[in-house]
Image (tube, rainbow, N blue to C red):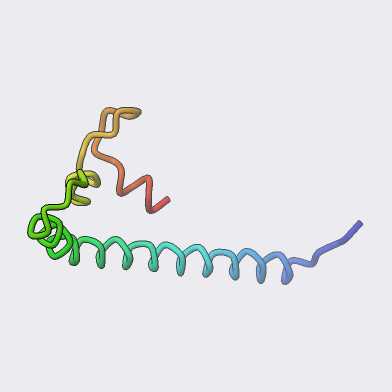
Length: 79
């Protein structure tokens, strides 16, 4: 068995929190980048006549979540 001191528990919880905050920030930056690039991507698909059906990310993020009946996708992602 292992006995951890208060300092050890604080260090690990503080470190874990920093990792979670960093991962959340990176996720939000990735979503922001995708939102910035989606118009260019959709335009390329249109110009090339590609038959792929795509949905706009902003519509997906702001759309109604069928499980909750609310527009809470971005909240779910950030959790």
